[in-house]
Every structure is written in structure tokens, then in C-alpha cells.
Amino acid sequence: MITQVKMSTTLPTGSATTTLIDTFVALMGTVLAAADVKRIVFAVKNSHAGTLKVYESDDGSTYRQIFGDIAVGASAATDVSGPYDWFVEPYKFVKIDWVNGGTNQTTWEPSMQFESQRMAAV
Image (tube, rainbow, N blue to C red; front, side, top):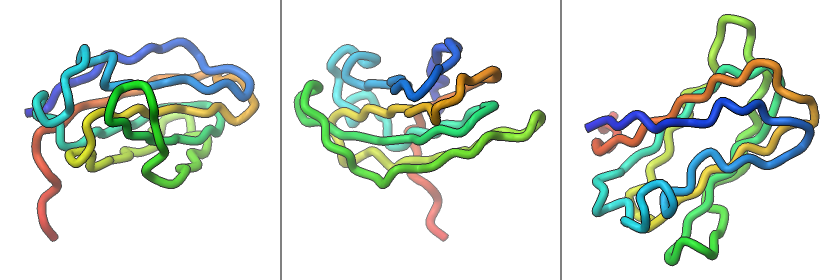
């Protein structure tokens, strides 16, 4: 099962941090396993650089970073940055932040989906 996640298209500005998704809020307190979310996939068409940060929480209020920072360069006019694919099944709640790189975005077209399938073994 793939679920498209509605994302804000408000342009990130300056060096602001924007929460792209907080599953505790989005799923109204339902843990990822109960919602059958094993992976989160994100892509974005962006005019300027930024950084993705992923956090996990047991209670929906205290978060710790679980993956290294992902530097996302500006995408060419017709390209998309990503997809970035995170295996989140072991966690109760996940939050993904975008830290804008200092220059206001003039293009911002994010997309995200929740997936119930693990990645295929290679």
C-alpha cells in the first residue's frame, strides 16, 4: 500500500527549519507499525539547497536524530531532488525536517508517500 501525504507548498525562507512531517501529529498518535508504515519516501523540486534531518520518538514529544544530515543541492529547472527513502518500521514516530540553506526557495514542489512494503532484497 502506498499513501500519498499532503504536503505544504509554502516556500521555505532563509535558514528556517520546516517540519515536513511529524507522524505523531499526522497519524493522530497512531504508531507507524499500527498504521502499516514501513518506509517514507520524499522527493522535492527545489530552487536552492537545504538539509534533510530525520528523527524518531517513543512518545511524540522528545525526538532524537536517527540518520545523518542529507545535503540536498538545488535541482535543475526540470529535475527533482531525490527520492530519499527511509526505512522507519522500527520506530514509533518519525519527524522529518527541512533546514533551508539560507536562500529563499523560489520553486518548492515537495512530495511524500508512506509505503507498507519493505524494499526488495538485492
